[in-house]
Length: 264
Image (cartoon, rainbow, N blue to C red; front, side):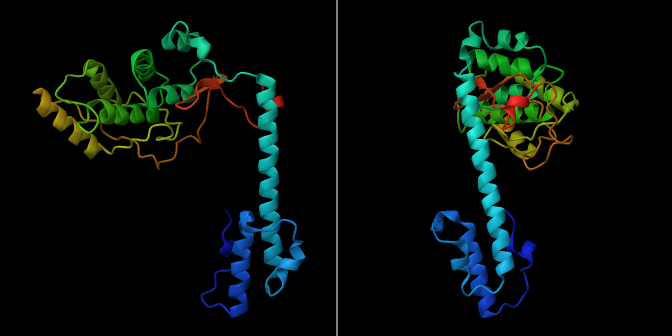
């Protein structure tokens, strides 16, 4: 959202009428508090900087108009495509579905491998399949390592006195990560998983797991990606399948945007 100071305000001292103008401007920016039947000019009484007020009015109205156009396009797309749920494509399992795609959809992979709600069975197998692929993004591997540590090996969520059946596979992922296998980094970390660990916290979980299992010298992940770090190549998508995955929607058709009629 555009800040007041970007429109010419921001001086250290304010007169009373300037303060009244600013309060009205902020109130006007929140359209939920306005009576939309009131002509804008009637709201300008006592406002010193009318030009700024009207400029902000245009910015806000343009934003709402653009959002309304996007909402309309999305509803039209829903009518056009019909059923968004694509779980019928998983009749032969997650891995068979992923192998059937004509390319490596790293964003779809990221959703499948880093959303840890109900991540078990065939989808867990698919998550390990994804992080074994050469095209797997570094952010995906980072989020997978952090999430797996937190939800599978942490005493906070599981009984770590029980040996994890996929431990060796998981340790192989950490070793590959530390060796620099995952280098693309075209996805922002933390876009699906709600777990973000730094290296020190990851090491603490592994130390506790080692003590409970009687293990030693498990590899520690090095250089886990902080979710605030932007992708290094402007979020390049590469191959894009028509599908996406989210916890609350499962496998579904992905909305290609308001210009979907002209999308290739």
